[in-house]
Picture 1: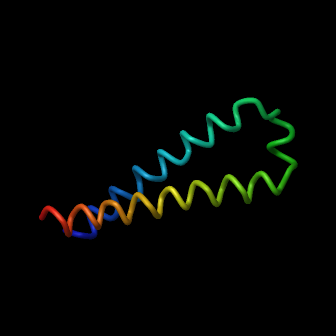
Picture 2: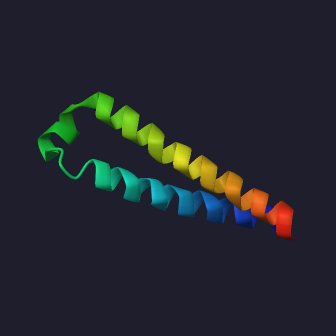
Length: 66
């Protein structure tokens, strides 16, 4: 059951991270997004950090309330 909470937290965190970078990258040109590798690493890492925090939150909530 704890794995289910972890996976759901990971998916929700990943979605939240994609939403956040979508807001930040709204003003960046499409061509720049395709060519600039530093943007890939910076914002890609941010999405995975949100996903990891979501997974941690899911496991924490399971341990705290279930």
